[in-house]
Image (cartoon, rainbow, N blue to C red):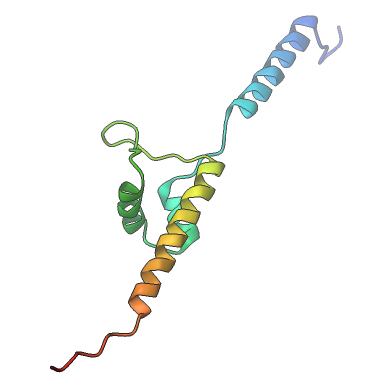
Length: 102
């Protein structure tokens, strides 16, 4: 009798395990959390979530759920946050008006 002989059942099991791994990889889509986005933007996660609630009517799934964004949605949100942040900086840097005497 030969040791480590591969039987047809072993080959079929190996094929099934390989097929399952391929399907899982294809079905899974990379998602990003608000913390991931806040880190990338260099801001506080809590402040970013507050901005996010004002920016979009979307909510985290169920009460106490988690936000998850696809790569496309991530790019959209980062662009919107950056535009909002630039507008805020412009207002903060605007010169103060001199009081009018009269």
